[in-house]
Amino acid sequence: MNSLSIGDTRPVVELFGVQKTYVTDTGNVRALDPVSFGFEKGAILSVVGPSGCGKSTLLRILAGIDPASGGRVVIDGRAITGPVPDMGIVFQRDLLLDWRNVIDNVMLPAELARRNDGEMRARAIGLLTELGVGDFLNRFPYELSGGMRQRVAIARALLLKPSLLLLDEPFSALDAMTRDQMNVILQRLQQHEQVSTLLITHSIAEAVYLSDRVVVMSARPGRVLDVIDIEMPKPRPLSIREEPEFTAIARRIRVLFEKEGVLAA
Amino acid sequence: MSAIIDTSSGLSIAARRRRKMLRNAGLPIASALVGLILWELLVRTLEVPTYLLPAPTAIVEALIARWSFLMTNLGYTALSAVSGFTMALVLGVVLGIAIAASPLVDRIVYPWLVISHAVPKVVVAPLLLVWIGFGIKSGIIFVVFFTFFTIVVNTVMGLKSADPDLLHLVRSMGAGPMKVMWKIKLPNALPNIFTGIKLGATLAPVGAVIGEFVASNRGLGYVLIQAVGSMSIDLAFAAVFLVSAFGIAAWYTAELIEKKCIPWHASQRGQH
Image (cartoon, rainbow over all chains, first blue to last red; front, side, top):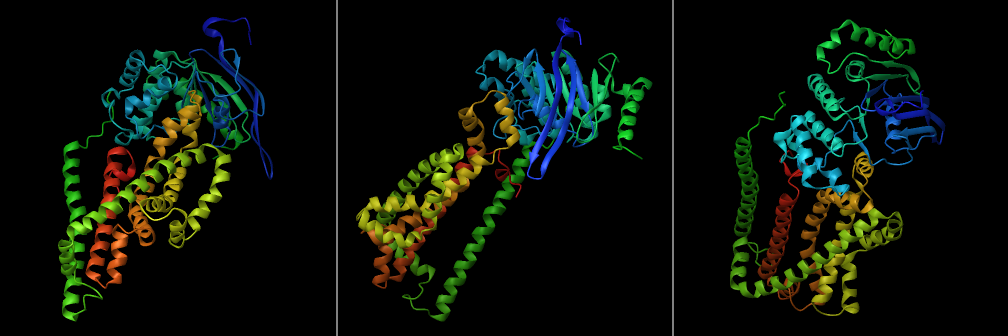
């Protein structure tokens, strides 16, 4: 790793030997073997792996929710030790506040940061419009479909222009068609916002379609099987998933899982 | 880009709701009327004496004959019920917040709460006369004692049921304990708090009446005791009717406020 590189190629997130062991009554459970990888400002990195591979553990460490048992996480040059305010997170469940309408849900981070002003409100409306829910500002979450709720959650995560966007299987609960649609929207918005994004997913297609780099993880205890850079130019049409270059990468990942016994025939 | 839009129109939902409300209100009323008519018929055909069980019409007659007397005493009972319940509500929510916010307070206060609830309150009522004396003060304190527990327990349950991931999320946005309580936990607890309010609101007039049994010379509880003592069972029933009507009114008032305050909650969206 070239420590002299600066500007846009400077790694925004770096993990050095990050690992997690849970101590339980019946002994220690290794959730995550030491993993190291990094990615650059404005890029999307996906971590793809089977259920229980420690993907979510990794995200919780990055978000400062759980401490790592070892190793170091450096975000924008700072080692993280607790919750990082400068971070947007979207979970699989949208976690919207039922008692707030759409715009007030999106404004929550601004309120908490005491930046609840007209400029922020305009940005919130702009984000919601870009996400295709600009006409629903005064609706309540229970009036929206799952896909629309998740769009609101994405707008909320992006409001304060975070230096890092963490997405923990954000589209897993959506139907296949909505999921495709969300992939297209997320790709466009991520490019527009130039936000460094870490996506946790168990969909190989989603990881390859969206990412600049894919980290492939093994089953528990999770370890890095491969790191693949995806060079295909963005924005990518959904039909790219049928292109030979795309299918070759997807196949490469699938073969790794097959060797691991995760996807054995 | 086309958004996926919920196309169910607001108008048809409103119309369906109105029809549903009519059906919801109509059935219970019809059911109560049928019960009253059966009661009247039974008393008349079996010639039950009034001092055992008066017919509904006899109760209505007593109500009309002693209207202003009954209303004065209802006012007295209502005063101690409402002021006692208001105090219990404020104390209960504040203590609930303290219990939910601090495990230390939780451990210290919880056994006392359970004890106060387990003690048979009706048995303790006569002691109020000794401790606090005759009059409305002991009635009010008895109402607090009677309704406090359900409010605290429901408040604590609501405050503790906030989604852990949601709490992580807002803490990652930089929210401190006060902000988390005020912006997340408390609104999230409102449905539970309203459950406590509705249960407490119906308990309050009962508590007031029990207080009046032992430590008052006014109020419907006193009227009830006196009426039974002089075998004026129709008057006693009229008093019971008024206490019940007051409790029912308290319940529906609380429910109305609930509807206004938490329209977003699943219980308020007619999906029972």
